[in-house]
Image (tube, rainbow, N blue to C red; front, top):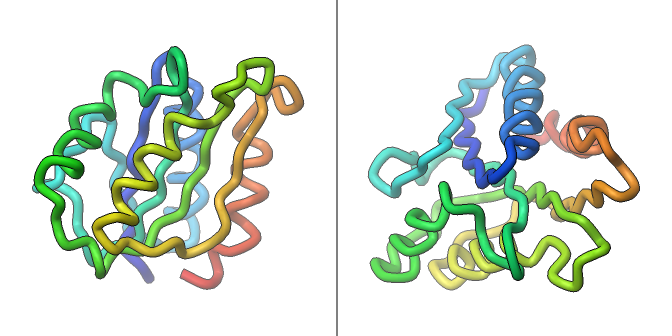
Length: 146
């Protein structure tokens, strides 16, 4: 089974709840899963699959807990060519910056040669007030490919 690093960007806790549910589903399948609420480059395995679960804060920004991780990546420009990632972005489409915070992080890691493992999901809390449901359905579509 695979090693998976779940990197969480959350302000009010919804992304953390989604990450916890995803971790439970992946652990049930036998994967080794580590969740990071205050991620740093030195603690995240670059040979593992990264699942990024993040909301957008303010005017299209990353949540405060994941901003230092983003800063590390943009300042250090590490070699992330071994990293495959999946993005689960959570937002509210009533804002014109819908899901733009996580896109900044994805852009930064792709600039360091990380590659998308699957197509991202953007969960709109206007349409899905329980974001865990579409996130788990998305995960179920591809978790057997890990």
